[in-house]
Amino acid sequence: MWGTRMAKSAKGFNLGAYLVAASLKGGDLERMSVRARRIYLQRYLHLIETQIRILSERLYKGSGWPGQVHAWDQDALDADRVASLSSLNYLFAVREILRTTIDTL
Image (cartoon, rainbow, N blue to C red; front, side, top):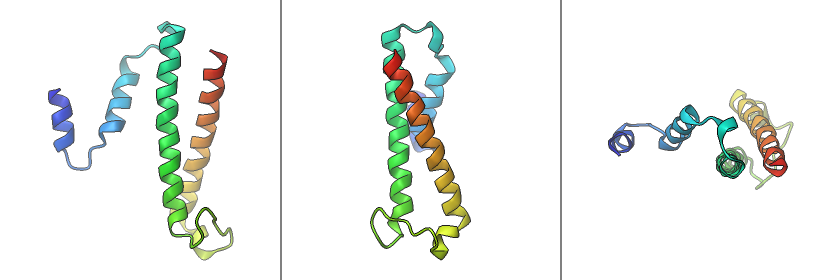
């Protein structure tokens, strides 16, 4: 509990990322029961889907047309946009892997 209060008071500290990292540290996925593994992976999937939603909103916010990115727009060539699209692509791949894994349990 003390660590959580300290984490909240630290400027710029992401408590959610800390909690995920802490859960990964002690978790041995292969030793978990199937039920526990499914719950663990579903929580991780929820985290990934939240990151996808937030990043998508950031990308589309300044495009002028909701949900539409113009590939040849000058802003589309911005280095930050390219990095965000790359991150989004990675998150989509992780989401698909998690969904497949959960379905096979």
